[in-house]
Image (cartoon, rainbow, N blue to C red):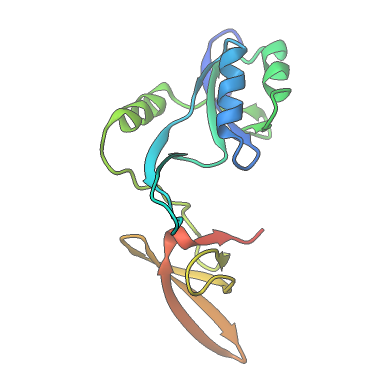
Amino acid sequence: MTLFDPLKNMWFALHTRSRFENVVFDTLTKKSFEAFLPTMKVPSKRKDRRVVLDVPFFPGYVFVKTGLTPESHLSILKTVGVVRVLGCSQGPVPIPETALSSLRIMAAADTEIFTSMAFMEGEPVIVMNGPLKGLTGLFSEDLGQGRVIVNIDILGQSAAVHVSEADIDRIS
């Protein structure tokens, strides 16, 4: 894990408020920061109309290139929607330029992009959409192709259900 050099511009990941990625991106750009918000086109899940939406690759995150001087760090943190700069106990951790270059290539390509929240076995999850909406259980297994198994334990017995990975979310 490499800590940053405040004299050199590097890429950092910003954690944002839920659904504030575009606000943070626009505001940072207006503040003359080099920002990057990789998005992909996804059909809307609404049943009443069909539209294609631009959604972030990584919901809740925006990337910014800066030297992260105390002044720029404060300016970034004061941006509406920014929660924190990602890092460790020693401070913010930069993202390698090669990783951002790869993201730029993926964002520019006109191919289907698959992202995953990488659930851990035994992690509590809730089904957010579909006929099983509201079901809570423990993540069990990733079957591939966007399908996962969620276990529900009750009375010493276990029941498992196959659901779409896109339909589940972590329980805090």
